[in-house]
Image (cartoon, rainbow, N blue to C red; front, top):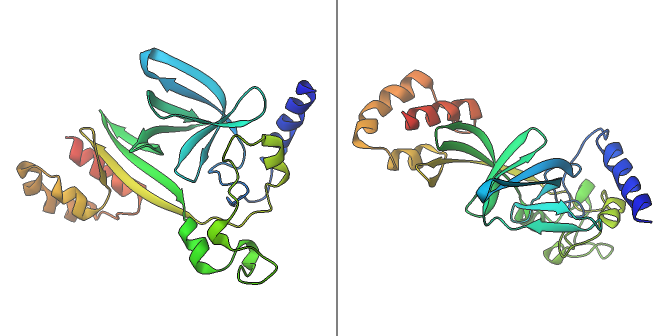
Length: 224
């Protein structure tokens, strides 16, 4: 039975990759459309391979255990996570994607679920009115992926939840300290030498603070 279950799950995961579009929802509150082969690197040069995904409630790491259940990986001792071609680290206990690095300094992307928007908007997936008697109050919506659920059940209900908007936030980790990737936060951490160079750098590069390519230039400047 376990072999049949594993084969069915594998087939479902493959088929889901061919969907026309993907939007996280409360029944599938994950960053990736399917659990993807990945590696977790821990201290003492240890590593483990599994099917991984990023749960958007808290941006924690989930994996599938041998019984087909979804479990959470604690961030303690984890130094790097690779999911497909993407690389992540835990920063402030949230799993963030590494967009660029310069020595030990990094540019990070946090893609979080805007659950507060769903509650305030009064609408769910496909414009469903959450105030109608036929729908439940989203202030207490049922979130999948909590409490070691079975992957098979989650896959069956994958498209039945309320859509979760994604918010992109950018951060720098400079000399081990995380700061927001915005002008004010960067200026507050500049050394006196960097402050003198800052106006010329901004004029030359025309930094756009929501564009990764611009932020990579800022990372290079901060790392010199």
